[in-house]
Length: 401
Image (cartoon, rainbow, N blue to C red):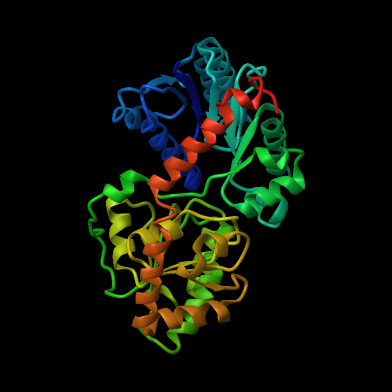
């Protein structure tokens, strides 16, 4: 008898890593044996309709076309209240529609590949992802530390623990964080490390239509304050005092709370000629930038782990990253590490990468070796194995822990 899996996905490309993770999960599910698994997907964003066209054996359901959702959407626009509160209401409306429809399907397992869950009344196993608890560990950043956001994230976390039989985390550090702050039993915290999507690996590199230096550091990240562009600019200024040609290329949406601070730092330190900001770029151009960068420099304050280091390693780009949370676990000897609060420490690592070709070659080689255990094939095998262990009748009744 086939195992029916329902998937509820609400993220879109603007969500960054959460979207990439959802893509990876759906790509993996699409490759499960069709004689053993049936997969149906409920989605809010149109991007998933296009995605599912590549997998005709997966049935898709556009939740936002539900009558209730449309009523709430019209009311929100009429009141001009599409802010945080109204967005949450729209999401809850869509969620209630999906819950009713998924209950009618009677799946064995429901998967939410982002932070969130459904109230399915214990009718099936439920597996959701919790990518981080940074609102607990890094609350000084307003993007996660504002009171309304902390309350919303805690509420969602409580619901995930209440509704789910198992939870996906990215690393042993992620599991430790969940164990410290929730009542979820350790055996139900399932480590599924991030990977790189098949679509990205298949993309044909294309040079961006911008003037770029031959030699540059690369940082693809939305301009959230926690991404720490400002300290990277300070490190770059230190580096340019010794290497006048040092340059950074940034890719990421600029409508975030760290952009103005970054621009002020660029102006104050006269780094205008040493920084290129490309905003959003297509996948093909992103791959080109990885392939031609001197190194990925990622001074983020958030973890436990991140996807860009894996993308860099996949495309032969050396990695330098913050020595925090689960990053050393993720990258091992395939990266250099620095203190993200210390521009001087960061600049020292950047100088090594800027000047030492042998070091770059070693990191590239180590990265390729590291990706043998973190590639999409390993990701798919891990996901299949953990799903089989969850739905195995020996685990007990559906919905039980």
